[in-house]
Each structure stands twice: as C-alpha cells, then as structure tokens.
Image (cartoon, rainbow, N blue to C red; front, side, top):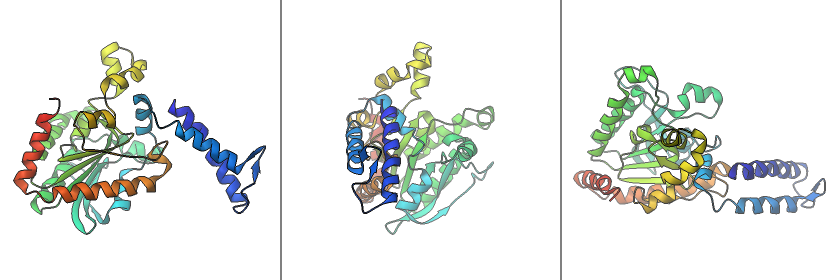
Length: 313
C-alpha cells in the first residue's frame, strides 16, 4: 500500500536530511549502522515500488495534504496575478480563488478550487467545497475573460460542491448547471487541469474545457469512492474495490478520451517535488494554449461541444 511506503520514505528523508545537515561534505557519515549512501539506496528502492500503483493508491495520493495548492500554481506559473472577489449577488466564496494574470506575457484568467494547507485554512475554505456564490464568482470571471478575449485556465481539486442546507437554499444545483451551460459556449480557449480530486458537479462547474489535463495521480469521477460504495453496496469500507470499478484515474480517462494529456509526477507523488511538477506542467500548458489560441471563437465553442458529445461513445 502506497501509504505504508510513503511513511517509510518520509522517515528516511528525515534521517538523510539530518546526516547532510551534520556534515554535508562527508558522504560516509552514518546513522547507527547505516551510511548516507545506504539510506539513499533504500529510499530509491522504495520509490521504485511507486511505479505501478492501484486506483486506490492514486486516490490516496490525490488527497495527500502535501500536494501543491492553487495559490502555489498561481505563484509559480503566472505573473502579475490580481485576485477578483465576490459574485456581485451574495458574497465572496473563498473556496474559489481566481483573477487576472499573465502567462508568459499573455493575459489570462485563472480560477481554481482552494482547499488550504493547514487545518484552519481547510475549515475556512470547506476543504475546497464551493457554495453557489463560488460558482457564480467563477462564472463572472469567465464571462469577463470572454469579453476581453482572455484564455481561461482552471485548476480542479475538490471532493465536490458544498452539500450544506444554506448552499441548497441559495441554488447550488442551478449555479453549477448555469456554469456548465455558459462554459459550453465560451468563445475563448479554456484549459482545465485536474490537480487532485475532481469529484461530482463540484468539479464540472469549472471543468467544461477545450482541453483537460490531469496530473498522473489525480482522479476525476462522478462521486467519491466512499460514496459509490455506500450507494452500491451500503458499505463505504469497500471504497478500494470501488476505485477499480469507477475508472477514475488519469490513465483510464486518457484511454477513454476524456482528457487530452496526463502530466507525469515525481515518484511517490507530486508532494515530493513541487518544482519538478511545475516545470513539466508549465511546458504542457504552453503547448496546449498555443494550439488553442490558433482557433477562432466559433471553432473553440464547436470543438468543446463535440468533445463532450463524443465522451462515452
């Protein structure tokens, strides 16, 4: 199980960092009976076991607290970011972060789910579960991007839309449905990147795109494996079995034509080397954006329509 492997790898990381901190020039420095070289060899062997992962392993990695968050993607991949807030109807939902930025000098609109990096932020952002105000804020930014001809790049990482009573009272279903309808007809390039979890309508509210990219260990599905198992078998403990049936991994979805590209992650998951991931994703974004920017508005809307009509055929 990937969880056990990563636990041992993290323990080795601490030992290796401690040895290097004690004497960076002495490669024969030891920890008990183990040398630095032996520890690094053991770590490499463990990480090599992460090459063949089960669907349940990928779900675990998709939810890992150490994965890069939306604010990190923005700071590393974009410049001149200016956050936009509020839906102009009710409030500002902080579980959606978005605004205007530049990508390699090109003005773009960037929008993504925000989970937070600490428990306090997780609670504040409802673990990345937006309310209707968040989807309306996102739609406001997307319509503004269309008005000024800016490409839209969205980052998806959510266990689903917020299921609370207040959200339903303010029209959760209508807000998501309106986003689906409006995004379908946008006349600017739309690229969505699934960076972690992409579950239910909460993900689709930002996911009607010309091209969808998925990180290697991200997942994209109609609901969580636990929810699937609870509905089908009345037993959420069978979520591991559900992972295999649901075909929710990036590899499954690439094969089925749902996504255009799978972005490789460092061995052991994106949390192990953020910078390596940013470099690979940056190259992929530039490649796809260059391709889409060659198309006119009508062609972009038609391509997006045909993409979704063909899914499942």
